[in-house]
Amino acid sequence: MLQGSDDKPRWFELPDDAVHEVFLRHPEDDWFAALGLRWHAVPAISNMCLEIGGICYPAAPFNGWYMGTEIGARNLADTDRYDLLPVVAARLGLDTSTDRTLWKDRALVELNRAVLHSFDSAGVTVTDHHTESRRFLAHLEQEAGRGRRVGADWSWIVPPISGAATPVFHRTYDTVQARPQFVHHPEALARARGEEAVPGRLPYPARSSRSAGSRKPGTAPALPPGPYRRTAVHRAADARRERHRGAADGAAAARPRGRGNGVPASIGPFPPGPAARGRRGRAGSGGEPSAPRPPGR
Image (cartoon, rainbow, N blue to C red; front, side, top):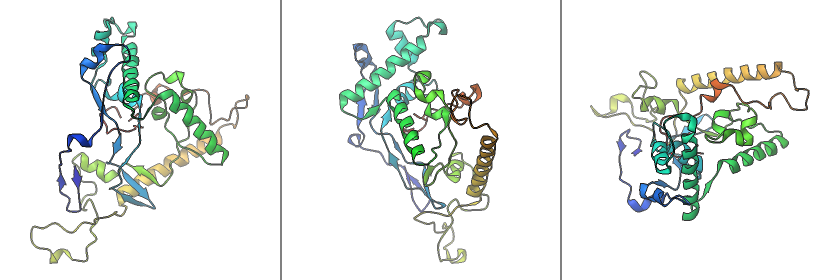
């Protein structure tokens, strides 16, 4: 779906050969292929804005590659997505009469094994949550050595399966906002909900030299083909972020700088409490909110 400067969305059917799909098979269980599952190879994001210097560029799609859990632990397993855990558990012959048999956990692992095996067999790039956890901590260490802070959300960094078995689980992270960055534009989110982002304003500020009186009756004002200026919605969001950042910095300054064991106070051995864990969204590079989301985390 494309939406241009005339503000009219247009739907185009993609040809079948434009999307590379991976058919999912299990490394040991032949019955898995009979489920007919498949997933696209590339997680592409097109509904975020690239924000540079206070200007949001809406036509800035990007892509990466999948982490297996984005597909196997979220897209295929979430109850509000494809909800395949009961299907896989039944094929595995697991006792699903009670959660204490851990049938969900066992089915979840096998589903994720199938995703990794299938992508590897198809020669499509995919990574796993253990590898990416180690890579992320190596990235933090490298950036810290250069005097740079890296922001992260614990609930997004910790994978949706085997969290405690990964090193990213056992610490906390700073919430640092760096720019340039990709952002969910407030006006785009409001319009997606059917709301008017800024009452009495066009969603995109007009940049035409023609006055409103010179337009033909019944025609819409000219809209810019390129980036658009920040509005009151952006400024309010920025103010909230600055308040939260100031509160977090003040709390960090008030904490003791060490725990008596050589570990800085900002790098604690304990993850956030249950309330923070409940915000898990992934995803995935992909998770990604519990509702279905575009591929990529």
